[in-house]
Amino acid sequence: MLRRIRNAAVILFISVLTGTLLLTLAFCLPVDRIRENVKASLYHMLEVQEDENGDPDRKALLAQKENFTEALMVQNAFEKVDGRSPYEHAMYIYHYDLLDGTTWATEESLVTSLRQGTDDMYLREYSKYWHGYLLFLKPLLMLMTWSGLEVFWFVFVLLFTVVVSAVAFIKKEPGIGLGILLAFAYMKPVRILISVDMSICWMVAMGAVLYLLLRYGVLKEKQWTEGFFIIVGVATSYMDFLTYPVVTLVIPLCTVLLLERGNVYSIKERITGWLWNCLSWVYGYVGMWGMKWLVAEVTLRTGTLRNAAWSVITRTEPLDGRQSFFTGIMRMLEDIFSQYGSIWYMVGIIFVAVLILSALAVHIIKKQWKEVLPVSLELLAAAMIPLGWLVFTQNHSAIHCVFTFRVLGASVYALWCIAVLFTGVFFRKNK
Image 1: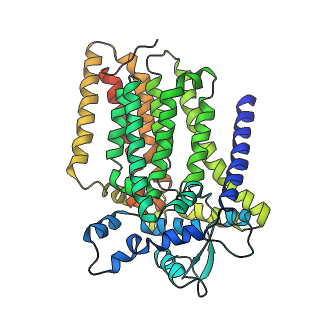
Image 2 (image 1 turned 60 degrees about the horizontal axis):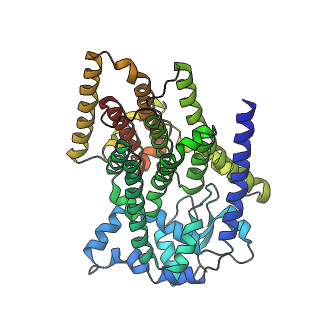
Image 3 (image 1 turned 180 degrees about the horizontal axis):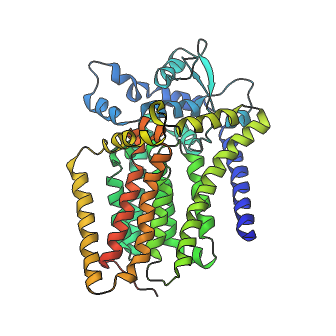
């Protein structure tokens, strides 16, 4: 236990130190070129929506994107406030806005700040997140316009997803490869491919799966699986805007369970292993996020700790001001499942369910169900994690259901893994 605590503390300390240093260095980069490249893309990025003669295909594409958040991300990338150090920028994350209240007008503010300047705008901050995406967004915007970045990012995310799936096949784990593609389909992949903010959690999850496929043997031999989940949680908290973070826990967790199938463990070993991996991710995610609040508050007295605490309370309180936490759950679930309008989503779930039940029946008839029961229960528990996340964050999940619904893609992946386990089609004997 002491070893676990020590390792976890060291990982978090190094992560905070490294994350702070890298973000501070990112704000040392010049921003003039970024401003020019973004300004050159303003019409393509936002203004075409107001043009009656604008390209209808581009308008339809923008309707799929989370323009509010991406406009804010771009502002964060080029903002440089006179008299403020790179470290202050890294902690506060400044941007100018047209509004001086609790709401922001990020799209209009982005256009105004670049077209007319910031003289009549209000300086705002967004210190409660790390904004680690700026480590790649700032350099990319120095090299290309936003229009070019969109194309580059689309190709990069698509190729990376295909590569991870292909590696699974190469490693004789086609079940994992197909599961990745199935989960991707249930996350409405077009929006992930065309939106930087909507792709971050998916990319973290895919990076984790790729590492597991290539290095899980070494990871297990050195007993660093828990450390791996801490790092995945840290990376999620550092890069993400609270979109659908629990995906980066469930997909790697299920991948580990499939890679471990065939190995014999006691019930106690399975339960403790599953719990420690989950708790490690939670520690990394919550710990890294909380340390941003603490570091910013202690070093600059930003007020981040107080504001972030109230934000957490708001996001987890009963929906629509209801008196009971439980009364808002059904409303939230209705909003979440409304995102799956196509009948093909239901067809896919029915197919997986039939596959599971048919294979389970065969196992029961052959009296082999005890061989697959322990792992299947672990996978089923993993499939329930996204639902627990949605319930716990019901206010945030309902308000932002257009992207929070993607956590269910991880549940689909977990169910698919049960199907892979039960059918035995992709079963690999333990060497």
